[in-house]
Each structure stands twice: as C-alpha cells, then as structure tokens.
Amino acid sequence: MSLIEARGLSKSFGSEVVLHDVNLAIERGEIVTIVGPNGSGKSTLLRMFAGVLKPSNGELKQEAGLKIGYVPQKLELEASLPMTVRRFLDVPRRVSEAAADRALERVAIAPLKQRSLTGLSGGQMQRVLLARALIVEPDILMLDEPTQGLDQQGQADFYRLIEELRAEIGCAVLMVSHELHVVMSASDRVICLNGHICCEGTPEIVRNAPEYRRLFGTGTQGALALYRHEHDHVHDETCAHEHEENH
Image (cartoon, rainbow, N blue to C red):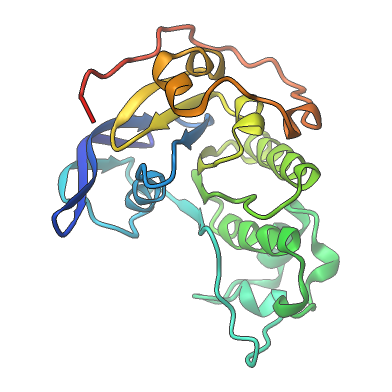
C-alpha cells in the first residue's frame, strides 16, 4: 500500500469548511509538493497528514509502523531561555550523540552543534529543524513552507538538500510551498489545492492546467535559474485531474 493515503478527507473549523473531499496518496521515495493561494488549506492538510490535526470527515490510512519527520512552518523561541542546537535535538525525547551527529552532518551544520538557537540565521534554523526531523530515520518527511524568509539562493540550496536526502535515505517528501518557481524543478508531483484538489500531476502537467493558470498565472522565474535539476525523473505523463466542484 501507499505510505499514507487520504480518502474523502475534510476539515472544518467551526462553521468554516477549509478542506473537502481530498483524495491523495503518497508513495515511497517521491517528492510531492502542495501549492495553492493563501487560505487554500495547504498547512491544514499537511498537519492532518502529520497527525497534528484530526480530520472532520474522511479516512486517513498509514503504512504500519510509518515514521514521520515533521518540520513546522516556524518555531517560536523564548529568548530568555537559551538552548543549544544539541540540546534542542533532545526535545521531546533524548537522542544519542551518534544520532545527533549523524543528523547534523546530513544537513551540513555539524559545526553549529554547541551554538545557541537564538543566534542562528533563518537558513541555519531551518536546517536545525530538519536535522531534528531526521533523527527518527523517517519514511516520509513533511515540511510546511520550509524556505519561508530565505533568499533565492537559500531556497535553491535547501531544495537541493531535500533532494539529496531523499536519494540518501529513500524517504518520501511531502511539503507545502509558495515558491512556485523552485517547486516546479524540485518535485516529482505537484498538488494544486484550493479548498479541494483542483489539479495534480507532474510539474509540467500542473503548470499547464487551466485551474493552476487561473490561480497563479504563468510566471515561473526567480530561484529556478539557481536550481539546477541534476536528475532526470521518470514521470508518469498522465493527464491532470480536473475536479468539477464549484468554489
């Protein structure tokens, strides 16, 4: 079976329906990116997949023993309570020195091990959060807008790192992003969300889907020029699925 699969998934907050009738499966080893306008339910969907939120309706199945590494959109730190990078990796449960060192090396920040979190740059902090997610040797990495606030070079470097990690440990990757220009090179599959899945498929298919163009236009410039996609992915050139729900 798939690593994780949603059928008819919906989520409401009070009387507000944020997501409805979402059907989505994530397979081992693929990089899937969720895009959509503000308020489209991207982070809500990711948090349901990560187990942070419970669906209002529908079914969510996981492979037995599935290990999830989750990187939140942001982390609020209390400046008056300084914590080192190494100590942070022990939250919420203590990890061995070997596991901590391996995770920091994988994200190329081993020299920051004893640094205070409060003194890190945005890009360094994102790598610390990623290192903590890798501690569990995840089957799937889930990342909520992981490069928010980074410059174009920082975005490109981070997505390149994600692809390298996927190749190294064989995990799937499910992430929310608003950097459409990079996502189109960094993903095997793109899910365009606007309260429901309005189109999905390979980056090429989604880029040309009418629903995607209505939401975002056709601009894909920016960090794409800095991101060099070094691997040729074998894509299943199926048609994008156009859902006919009105919104």
